[in-house]
Image (cartoon, rainbow, N blue to C red; front, side, top):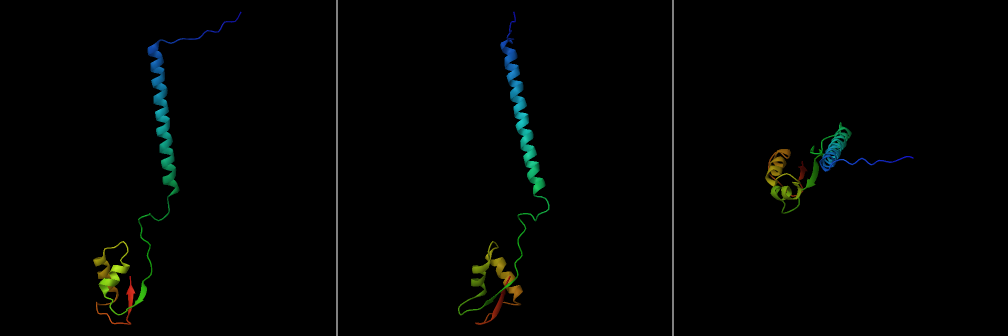
Length: 107
């Protein structure tokens, strides 16, 4: 005759075993998160950082009646402040004088 015996641990040992399993699971999840994060960091090596602005060549613009450097800066300043772009416009065009038909370089 073969008998199967079930081992019953006292309640406090069941609780201790459950806590150990929970702690092991938490550590496993933490290690997995570290590995995934490290993999993404390693996969992104060698490329240009996302914050590096792309350099575009200067564009040409023909001045129309009523246009000013301030109005051109307002249209083309992009992510830069309008006044900072105005300074770049003045520098790129050797001054602030405009005439209708003049070719202006837009940085």
